[in-house]
Image (tube, helix red, strand yellow):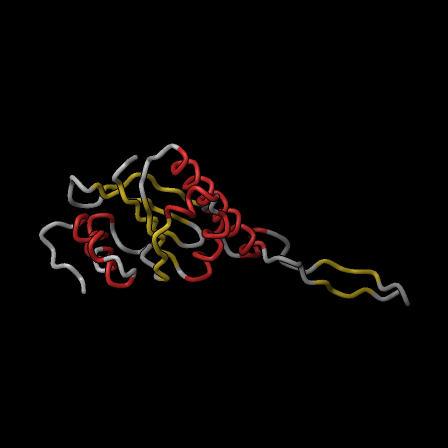
Length: 166
């Protein structure tokens, strides 16, 4: 089994996956996934006017709101795409464990999309948006997660020479 730990940094429209191996220090970008449609305004994704419904009691018509906002639908589609990607990688033993870093809503949707193999390797979820952080600065942001996830020894192996969080 691999000794690699993944950090899945995501939001509703993009994800970057970083790997950190015990023998090596520092994070390495593994892959990047994007859904450009989820960044578009909702009006460009679907109808900008609500559909019309015929009343059964009279000849009047009224507006009916769509059941799912088109933008939310795209974000949910992306969460399933990301969950499937992580599940396939888990089945191929590309990582031993991973941390999901995403805003709360996106994290819930991504966790729901994970299969059993990936869920078993998930060691923690950090509800934080780090999608704006550059690749070279990501290590500084994730090394403090050991304290939040109550697994400081794991992070001490991954980031040698750094102080162990209490």
